[in-house]
Image (cartoon, rainbow, N blue to C red; front, top):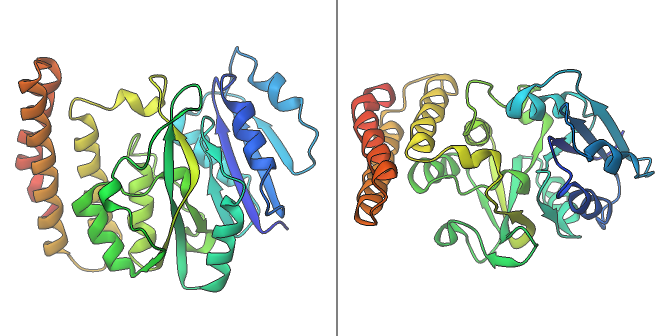
Length: 294
């Protein structure tokens, strides 16, 4: 059995899949399997994947469209290792990515997951910046108590870039990403793991995260992302703890309200009225629905 399963769910991936696979196969840590699950497509994705002869690749073609979260979970279902990574089809690993995270996980069995800093790249691969929340990224490696990580996720935003994460199978017990959440299923999983495990952070940028208009998550804007963030938090606080967490709920509600109202004011001031009114409506709903958290 390999030490790590790198899971790569793909859909209409011909533009970037080659770069993603190349970066995984170029890892300095080599004891891994690469599990690829492909949605039914009409582009050259299958042709590109089948051109690779590396025996670590296990390729599965989905018989029907499963959707984003369904395909993520399908890839994890085919995995066999105890340490798991879910990679995006359009992102690029740095060569030391797996090695650094395996070392961290093996050094501290109490860690449920470890994540790293990232760089952002554009469609052509040019670096356009660092993490989208740079003020939340430490300059040094850290090990966070689970409660501290939960609080940061509820009051600072999703500071964890999903493909930068390595997590333990036993930290989620084969309970993969929550299909109730189309946009924030990763947030719910990080909150779930941190509710009972420590979390590691590596300050080096070990992954290039590609920002482009064709991203699936680009559909979530105009306040939709905030409302689903609230839904993920509500699920987490009601299902991951044996008792109510009123203080965490109040902190999350305050953060989400400030986020929504701030975005509404900014968009309206910029003349983006449709977007502004969307965020204003999200603020109203967050305020009204805050009782779901508190």
